[in-house]
Every structure is written in C-alpha cells, then in structure tokens.
Image 1 (cartoon, rainbow, N blue to C red):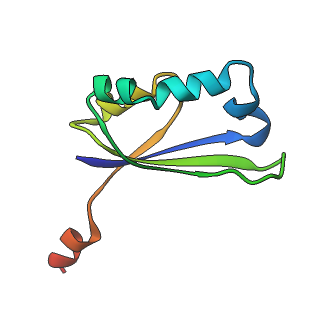
Image 2: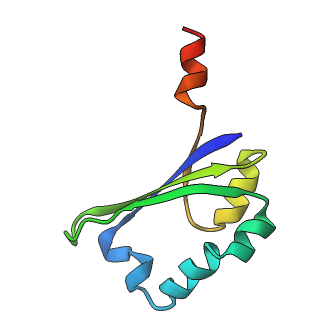
Length: 94
C-alpha cells in the first residue's frame, strides 16, 4: 500500500537547529533504519521557509503493508497518514 505521511513543526522547533536533531534525522532516515522498518521510502520532500514564524512541512511517500508499520518507523515524530493510489488507477474507474 502507498501512503503520504505529512509532518509539520514550527520553524523555531526544527530538529535541524535542536541539540542532537541532525543526528536524529540522519539515524531516522538511514538506509539501515528504513530497511529494518520494512518500508520503502519512495520520496521525501520538505518545505522549510526561512521565516522563523512559519511552519516546516515534510511530505514522505512511503510504501508499506499498513499504517502501523509507518508509525513505528517514524517513532515519536508525529505524522498524518493518508493512503494514496496513482491517479492513473483512479482515472480507469471514471
């Protein structure tokens, strides 16, 4: 199954500026962690405006057997999950 996982945090709380945050991100998205989690990370995209009052958003395209597998992968990082299908499959039903 294919999912979009969306993560949002205030720019002021970005892991990249927090103590140990860069290491946490590197570990979370390491090839070893991805493989051991049983997911395929199809794509990962970030919107990080320079405005300190803005929110950063991450969009992750993930293939996994179920939502629980993805939630386990992200651990304490809060994500909103939505199952998606290629538009070409949906268009066939029109």
